[in-house]
Length: 404
Ligand SMILES: *[C@@H]1O[C@H](CO)[C@@H](O)[C@H](O)[C@H]1NC(C)=O
Ligand SMILES: *[C@@H]1O[C@H](CO)[C@@H](O)[C@H](O)[C@H]1NC(C)=O
Ligand SMILES: *[C@@H]1O[C@H](CO)[C@@H](O)[C@H](O)[C@H]1NC(C)=O
Image: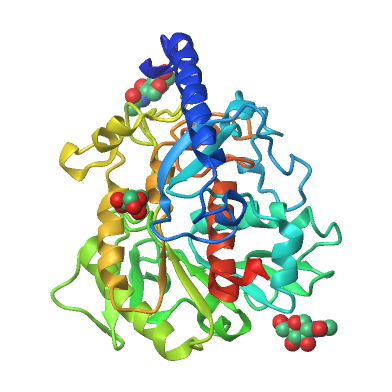
């Protein structure tokens, strides 16, 4: 029995060709960069965002010299995502791809410099486990600049760290739907019931804490569906304490919650707080849903022309939720002061970078299926960290700060 899906076949030849073409591209790219330009010095270019630079659009380039900046001993790991410890195959390859945005380059965050810039400031993530995945990566990267980093779980934080050398706290508040929701059993039969969602009340874990943070990163996404809330125990939406009639489906519920949470953020979060909304990253289940032997044993990133086949809603594949959700989220964000952190497109390529069957527990795959939704650490989330920290730097210091 071979659980490995089709794309793996012939991959050695394809991979060699890909490396070759990548090297050729790299050669031309570096030749271009080294060509003296009176307008833009390459060193400066990497330090602030030039015009036309869109960090979210670009391509992955294979760089065999690229190495992860932390290993499996980082104390902030979550077991299921600690792919080095779980002996996931091909971790070298996963970590050798470098994201090259269009019209500019993305340098790796310098954790000393970043924490220095953030001295006496705090960064908070609010949302579901994909934001937790992001946070763990951030903590492990930053820890390389402050080995005294300590676990921090105050103020309702689910997971976090304090960096004593810089007096910086970075933490995650779990609020999978962002709005408050709770199990409401039937009086007649406590085994049956509903999940009540109060669309106008933020979840307990983050409602009181936003003023503590100088930077906030929100997300929500993969809980908005029947796999988390089946018909027998549905989500029921409440507004101003009363059930909303007629009742809302998942997407309409999401829209109402987004509208309310975004206006709560506008009202309650100080205007000086830097706010980001991180778009949903895609899942990569091949050949079936997560509970139908869906698999993600890929040797290399997807090619650009494959992305629409995988993710365009009109193709009705199992992974189409990402773009549907993001469209709703982007519409909701319009006109708000929350900046869009669009990690979706760059992540769409990386079918090769999920924990898959290497989950660190014997029966995990039999029980839960492969994990083709969260991301291996170290791995793709370090690119998210590079982008986020670059945008934070850009917002705090402005484009020209590095020249002084
Ligand atoms: C890159 O620069 C070119 C030329 O200035 C521009 O047409 C293009 O839209 C830019 N790409 C992005 C993603 O901004
Ligand atoms: C640490 O940062 C907080 C703000 O997050 C500030 O109130 C506090 O005074 C700082 N502590 C020191 C020792 O600088
Ligand atoms: C998943 O794979 C197992 C083992 O090969 C098989 O017994 C089961 O029927 C498959 N399930 C689905 C939904 O295809």
